[in-house]
Image (cartoon, rainbow, N blue to C red):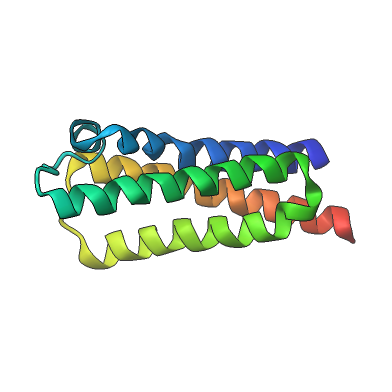
Length: 124
């Protein structure tokens, strides 16, 4: 069962690492999100966001191998995924690339739920 928990954390970690490529610049951000990032302030904010997603992805993957990090990783993962899903759902009207992110976050949410339930059963 602990392998299952680790696998779920790794899947969610990889999903969170995917936007890290946005740190490379506006062209990469545009490919990821389907909108222009020619405005420098927006590009800076989104590149910084890519770094933060990278950090979260590293935490999630590290937690797969370090059980002492798992509670923090699950909480951070749930906050990240749930906040995006809630924001996208409440605003609506997003493009195809953001719909792909929405789908990836649904997958991440399912993995987080299954991993958290399995971890809880291990701790009983």
